[in-house]
Length: 172
Image (cartoon, rainbow, N blue to C red; front, side, top):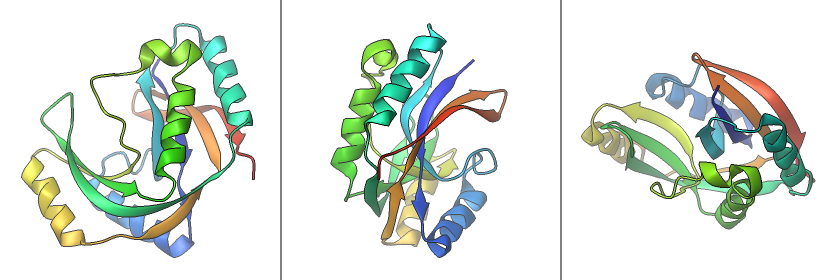
């Protein structure tokens, strides 16, 4: 059992279609889960009921976040030799970071990885070699996609499938 918490990225249909087309070409997880920002990375819950209650309590007080994905970044994976291409926000970044910190409080505090800096992002590509990720970033140029985080999802990601555990709409 591996749980995670994400915020689906919502935007204009044309912008989402472009993002998903890019992800379909370059992100092996595109067919498993739509564009999103991961707020709590995969963990094994020690007390599933406490985690769910904490998730619901934090989400119940969170207002929706307006954000703008403003740049592409090529990032080396901390655990293996692969690299990813992220779309990162400028607008909304501080609010996303604060929400990330709130979620990692309480029963999730032991799951926080201090060895990996948190970079709010939507993953659009994964590569075996970092130079491939850098090449894609150069070819894509600039980005400017306005969107919202209107919901939080607590998910089980096991055996290559994503199963919803709980969903909470953010205050609007």
